[in-house]
Length: 338
Image 1 (tube, rainbow, N blue to C red):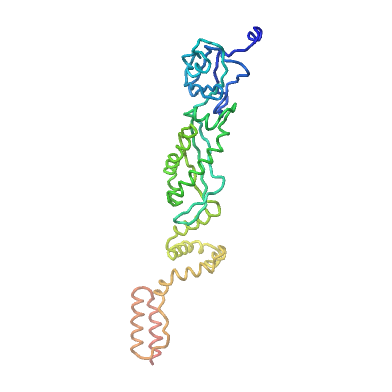
Image 2 (cartoon, rainbow, N blue to C red):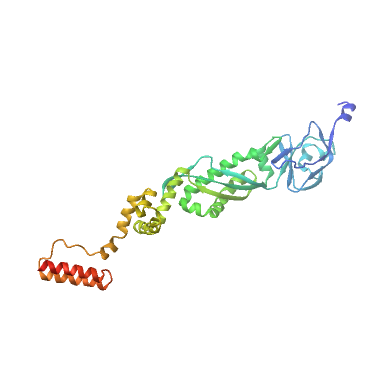
């Protein structure tokens, strides 16, 4: 290299990174054929980490702080660059900055319903969705396993892998737990805790810490949800006979206020015959008590007439028959004996 080329050569004296994009996880410092000056300043801000890679090998990792790049701060590069022989020349290394801040409200969800075996409903297909947050805690592992030599690596680049990891873990958890779907839907907080514990080792492999995991909703596909709603409704009804009697009793004041009485109300609801049958069943006992059964045949002896008169007299005393009705029936029976 000529003296003029050496003078024209650019050297980097200050290395730092400002996070101007919240979605960036890793950014490679732009070298552009420049060399790092021996004794240059490296600034790593809070919520950052810096990784030096020399000739494809990880040299050193720097936590937040300000550093002067020398044989004291880069012991590995000391060996690589022969600085131990006081050869304090510029050097070239790739410098990667990592954002270690929490990445919040990352969404996850089942793109298609997953099929599980349920002890209440048999085989069911279910959906789930929610949010989670994470941060980079091991820049070496993240560089080696995920980002590699890319100039920029963002949360969107990682989301697909993490969502697949979440869905796989959820399918395994549901299959292993044997918890019925109804209990899953009613205990989403406990489900979130179990999912977080199951996912943490998978995130750690990528150099990530799973900070939170939330299951916001567990549901069935629309067609299955309708069937479940019907089943829940049947359970809420309970005794169908009592429920029918209750509905009929409530319909009587409504029917009385409608033109045409009970028949008009029934027709207006499109259920006249059904309501009439229900009313007959609901009040069969009371109507039987209120109206004496007609004798199958005329009394054949005075003993039969006397027994029937005693029954009618009892109904009159209870207020079911009036005195006039009792007298008329008595005269009719006595006439048949003459």
